[in-house]
Image (cartoon, rainbow over the protein chains, first blue to last red):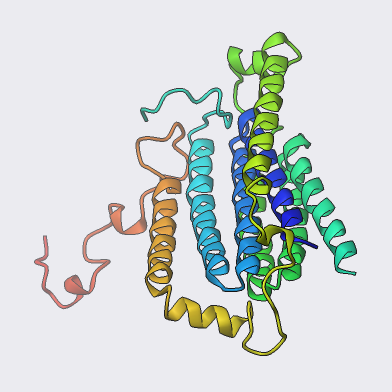
Length: 99
Length: 217
């Protein structure tokens, strides 16, 4: 399969993640959709890495995975803190930044 | 053979992504994301990225998703929620606001898709129409753990170290965010004093008292 097919799949995954971030309201699902977007970017990076035949894209994909893990860590910590304080777990309800 | 595998994996990945968005229950969304990640690992294997595929399955689909499952079980997903305000009701139902939101999201997604397709496929690059650079199997060739490890420890050493620092900072930040705060919480359960802070009879506790370092009252 040519590289263009992989790029098309990565674009579709990225767009699906973006639509999910826009339309869903549960912050857990928004985090999942952020993962989708990062994974689409990862697929494009690895496809380009294959195209060039060197490993730079793969290393960058590993770094993206690290960033995704950090984001999950912080995001889930925030959701647990929200739940502890009996706030609604819904991004439309959370309009005040002050604690 | 590789074409068949590609289409199976691509359909699995896209179906998993659709499932994450469409499914109502957050737990099913997490399961759909696990399926998506495994399909994506298959795509990585087809692109000769063996180490990244293994990391994807072991770390992502294994460890990170377990975190998600725990938090969904703790928070309760979509079903259990606190009181829902007026805005949430309006957005969730079948009213004009909700359908407008969905339509706007679909429109924006379509625009983004067109733009990305133009940007990726309309570049005029010769390389994206080929199979990629030459590849010969071997223990130290493109994409193996030895290859990635050599790159990480030589050319990308700084990025590697920064990533490790980032992970540590994120772990500390998550602990700070999710810890119990005294006085800030709405409920008072679970704030019993530690035994050392409780008032106790004199001369029954510490070693200092035992050796006479503390005067008898």
